[in-house]
Amino acid sequence: QQQVKQSPQSLIVQKGGISIINCAYENTAFDYFPWYQQFPGKGPALLIAIRPDVSEKKEGRFTISFNKSAKQFSLHIMDSQPGDSATYFCAASNTGGYNKLIFGAGTRLAVHP
Amino acid sequence: GAVVSQHPSRVICKSGTSVKIECRSLDFQATTMFWYRQFPKQSLMLMATSNEGSKATYEQGVEKDKFLINHASLTLSTLTVTSAHPEDSSFYICSAPRRGGEETQYFGPGTRLLVL
Image (cartoon, rainbow over all chains, first blue to last red; front, side):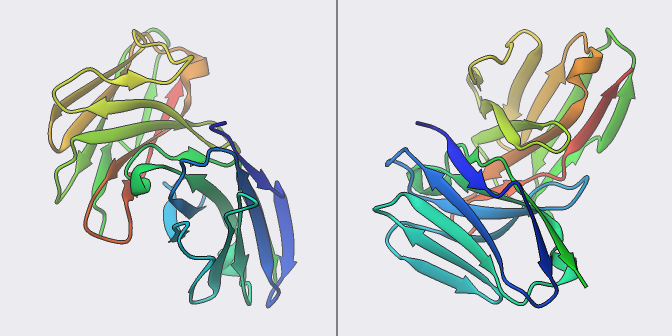
């Protein structure tokens, strides 16, 4: 019940296209859903996060869609750029995100010019 | 700028030796810190929760005696890999929760451990 399932494992998108990564969870106590971007050899960096009281959150080219009833959330990267090529992790936590994070398996995104 | 630091960033050691990794919150106090391990091309797996002034809480399957955690102050947690072996080679990352902003967890830059 602690798992967060992420798909796809890898994704190739052309420059300017839309990248979509999906995650699903089981634990209804989760109340904080962040997305992290990680480059090789670096720690993860927060991209955008959402809480279950909203269904969508947009920050620049990044949008999270959240479906509470389906226990699913997704990351959309609009106008994908080669610099977006990285590994993306969804995660979930309870107590507003101040507790431990449970990470998805990760998606390796490659944006081709 | 960085709000959580780790030291060292990279360490190479011989099998059987112990290695200490430090995690510091730079401009805030953290009564709790989290330690993760990440193998190549895999996700971050929580190892333990470090609690200031009390014992760490380890995740199932993580050996307490092998991965010693000490939360000595409100800004410092250390992870000591004792009697390291090649299979302990990994990327170790810490995080610290911080209240008062949109971002709830700040991650360190990670420590690459290679055991020969």
